Image 1 (cartoon, rainbow, N blue to C red):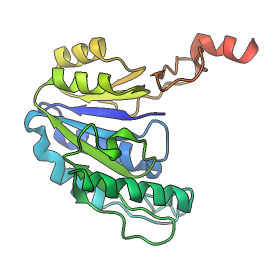
Image 2 (image 1 turned 135 degrees about the vertical axis):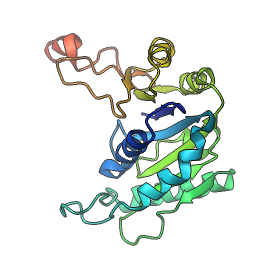
Image 3 (image 1 turned 45 degrees about the vertical axis):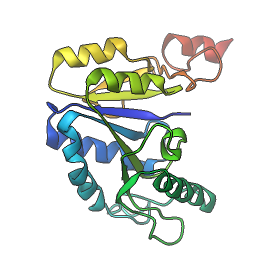
Length: 218
């Protein structure tokens, strides 16, 4: 599984960061293992959440074969039902809905943004695999790192900042396989290692990089 976190510092480039969060969380209708499904806002960067929801609201939901569509359908009725159910559970647990995409018919689920999502919320504990972004807030970078490291999965994570020192600290202290610095979906090319870690890997070998040779030949 994967529960990829994006950590947003107040010194990040606001415009580029919000665009990256929209694309990484809502692209492919959130149905990819490297989708960014949790945004961790540090300090007063939390003030950006309403604008983030506004940008997500501008995305067009429609036929995935239509080049004008931004968000396609869920892969099955069961997938949509599961995601809608988890959104409802999160709201019952105290989350606030900034953008509600549950009003679409068929297999479509529109962009959805949740705020005030706690780490014991169903929307945080489960991988929704849907166009749903869960937002949580902390006061410091150290708290953000601790929050990410406490999650059992370790597929990918990203930090958005203009501080080289903060980026290096995050890179060194985070316990996640793939780390992006102002890159929301840090997916490597095959000749580098795809290094999902902890609960995000099954088995003892990765399938990219040098380990891929062993993976495919022995």
